[in-house]
Image 1 (cartoon, protein in one colour):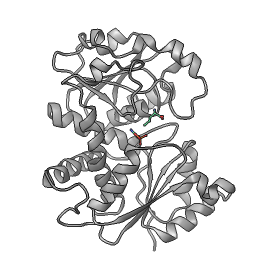
Image 2 (cartoon, helix red, strand yellow; image 1 turned 30 degrees about the vertical axis):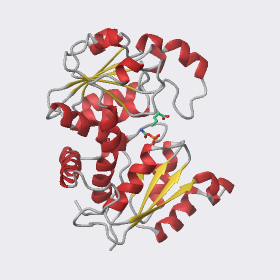
Image 3 (tube, rainbow, N blue to C red; image 1 turned 180 degrees about the vertical axis):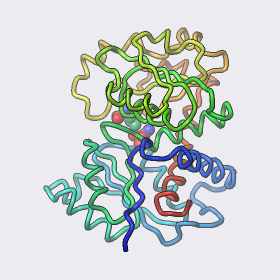
Image 4 (cartoon, protein in one colour; image 1 turned 90 degrees about the horizontal axis):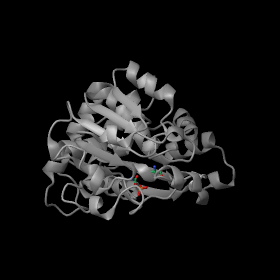
Length: 311
Ligand code: CP
Ligand code: NVA
C-alpha cells in the first residue's frame, strides 16, 4: 500500500512538534558545519542520491540558491526550471506535469502565482511538494525568520513580533507560525491591505496570539522584533494605490525607537530601500536581514529532510 507523500505547503498543516523539530534541525545542521566551504556536503550526506526539481513561475534569488546549495549540502542534486520554459508554458496541465516530474525526481519545490496550482500539483504528485512562495503564503521564509530570531534573542516563546505594511503572503505565514509557537504577533496594515479576516480568525481559534490594527505605532510599541516586506509583491497590479497607502508604515529610525531597546529588524528581501524600510534601519547593527537570508539554506535543508522522511 502506498502512503501519500509528505508535502510542505503551509505551516498551518504542521503539528507544533513538527514545527519545533524543523527549527531544531535547522539550528543543529547550521552549527555542525560552521566555517566549512558552502558547497561542501554535510558529514552524513543524508540525501545522497536524491534529486530535487524546482519550478519557478516568478523571479527568485534566495529561494533558488538556498534550495540548490541546501540540496548539495545534504548530498543530493537539484535542477531548476522556469515554468515558462517548460511545457506548462504551452498549456500542459499542472496535473500531467506533476505526474511526469514526480516520476523523475524525489521532491519538487514550486514558486507559483496561484496557490491553488501548488495544491493541485501536490495532489497529483507521487513525491513531496514544497511551497516556495505563492500569492497566499511563504512558509519556507518564516522558518528562516523564526530561526534568526532565536539565534539573536533566544527562544521565541513570549516574544512580540510587529509586522508593519502589507498583510501579504509572508505576513500570512507568520500568522500560521503563531498557531504553532507561543509568540505574540501584532500586524499593522492600511485598512484595505489587511490579511484575510477568515484566516486571522482561524488562527486565533487555533491558539495564535495575533491582532490586526491600522496604527503602526500601536503595533510596534515594545516589540522584540520588527518585520516588514515590499509594498508591491510580485503579481500585484495596483502599484500606484499601494505606493499611496503604505508610506505611514515605513520602518524608519523614528518608529524603531518605539520598539524594545534591543529590538531586531527582519525583512525577507528583496528590500525596496526608501519605501518599506530606510537605509538606516536596513544597515543598523540590529538588522538581522543578512543572517535571515543565510538561514534560508539551513531552514530549507530541514524542510527537505522532513519531506523525505529523514526527520
Ligand atoms: N525572500 C525570498 O523568497 O527571496 P527570493 O524572492 O529572492 O527567493
Ligand atoms: N511578498 C513578496 C515576497 C518576495 C520574497 C512577493 O510575493 O513578491
